[in-house]
Length: 587
Image (cartoon, rainbow, N blue to C red; front, side):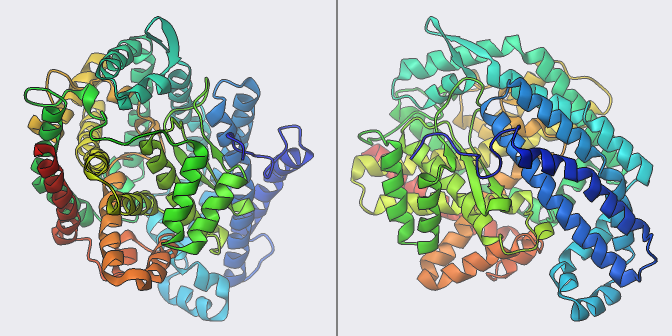
């Protein structure tokens, strides 16, 4: 078992003839789609639609393999000149698909519902793509002219996409002065989990000080990305960037409002938890930011990668053998890049690689139980990817909200398993870890949602300088964390370290985390009630997430997401855990 992932299953480097052949093939595949959209051969409407779908499939598989490989390499070597060059080449080539894709989408949009149903009975490809065709009819109303779509794609290379790359490069290479030495931003942020109070505070102070070096270019990146998104959402006829996000998320505003209503009602539960934690750590009053992730309770020892492998295979082998088998492959076949190093991006993610039927996982592993939870989380994404592999290529993309379902389900299962045999000290530790994470997806995510909403509102007629962005962030944190956090010790630069704000294609990449956590808890409550008989339903829900709305996927388990009741039930489960935590803390 190696500690860095292997990408040889994709390509053996940029000089691999297969890489160059796939890159060269993009032009021909784009021409195939253009010819199909123009119906140059005088084919029937049904034959033309079929040809378009097959051409879109062929291009999708090729570009995803190429761009995925480059993205993975850039994630662990953000300053590698060859990778940056290849990224630009592939991005420039891919931008040219915008015109034939827009032409193709407009042809498909002409297929009315009745015709689509008729063709689905005659040809399985139309049955498989019934949801895609319906979604395409809806999205076609927001397409620009063919020429403008091409222009937008080309300009994005030096616009939003370039600003996004700037963020990644600046944060991955930022040098932080800490204790007389230079460390990466990921390294200093990881110290927030230290069991030494002085280390946590000094790391927090060093982190905040370091942002002065990059705050201005990051402010320019954020402002310009949000300005681009706002302009395009208006040109496409959306009421707001949020409406555009919700439509892309296959989620209704009614569902979002129901979830936010329930979250707002339960915020005091998490505020009490934070104040209880503050008391345990010796603070008078609210918790300072630098102790948000401080360990509480006792959890002896470290978890090597081999320890994590053993634990996860045991825990999830009892849940579903095929998940344990996938996890075994992930560890043994080098799907995971574990440890932090210069040039490697911070945080963690899982990227599906459907061309080889696998996933790749990045972490910055530090051998704590929290890092094992992160592995379980990312392996949940990989399990989701496994359950959609048998879909046709254009049906393998799930929306942002459901993207966090399987990952949070895994974390919940791991914690529930560990709590069964935990002594009092370990139980306090585990409950606190779960509540700490849940506070992030409730309070912190709410603060991020408020902040991004405020930025979009403000960017319509002004440029936000770093001090203004910091002020907006502090205001959002005060509203979301209430009296649980010390208002004199918050994190004004959270806008500068979270990549989610810097995606020109994914605005409001915050509320999906709350959705995923609460939806997963609701599904897990079903599992606890129904036992192993629920597992096939769970897999069916994951399988359906790419071919239905989030509300449709939930209905498969008899869940109505459009009213606050479901969300309240999930939050009640966390409130019960918070109550037990407070009781143990008093002892």
